[in-house]
View 1 (cartoon, rainbow, N blue to C red):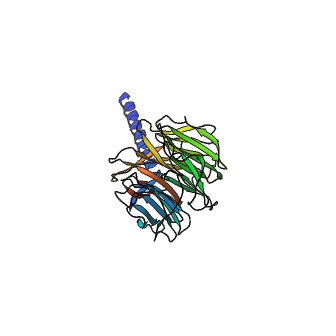
View 2 (cartoon, rainbow, N blue to C red):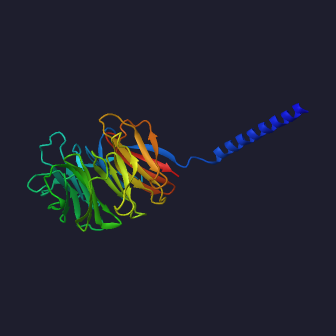
View 3 (cartoon, one colour):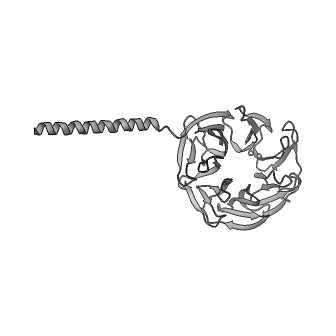
Length: 358
């Protein structure tokens, strides 16, 4: 009798565990991976991409070897627009056929930087006489332009934000000044508040700083948000939450949701000295964010895409094997039905498209 009881208990336990096993298997089958990733090269292998620009379905790569374009509607590879062999720091796409490009010769820094202009879609280029830098010629590191204010173009130098109302011929500093001892700036217009410009960079002592301008006047200045050495690489604006402003630094990604009153660190990579160059947002999923980083090295590095499903509170990292030089210099997100198309410009790795399927 005692043996039968024990036997019955053992059979019950075995059946119970087997049932759990079946339920577990069924659960796994019914819960597929939330996102499936695909990746493909758009070309320019071995080329350093300085920035990406998207205009409609035309994706432009501003590189150390000229300006290239891909029509992403047809999934085409990158084709030369112009200025082959020239290190293009930044470009402004003023019209479908009118471009401005800033060139600096990396092999001879003593040569004067050049602004080039094209009015025929890049078929021909001519040097644009201009006064950026004042009496001392200074490289123009970053263009910023708002299509809602087509007559105003902004450009940044070592520690200056300047404004041009004649398509780059003459420049007026609105913050800082020309010929200062510093290590370049970038500036970004808030699309939800076009009168607000957020800009930042690195001073002469490797000190990172961030400024907020409104109507071309400084309203905020921060120089202790992030441990030094650091620098601002990009400011991104969440158009679904206009108060959500994200800043890419050397070492971290930070956020403010109250126009700079308070700040929080979302990603900490100070110990690894990772630079964050790109942040993107889904146009349909308000909680989905993406970010890209670059490790300060001349050697190979992995391509890793950071993504968050809770507006940046927590992050996951998706690695992509097979990409030798995977440091991200810029990142753009285009939301389409059922997927996010993420375009990344790499340091010595060309341009890749990462598709995040929902």
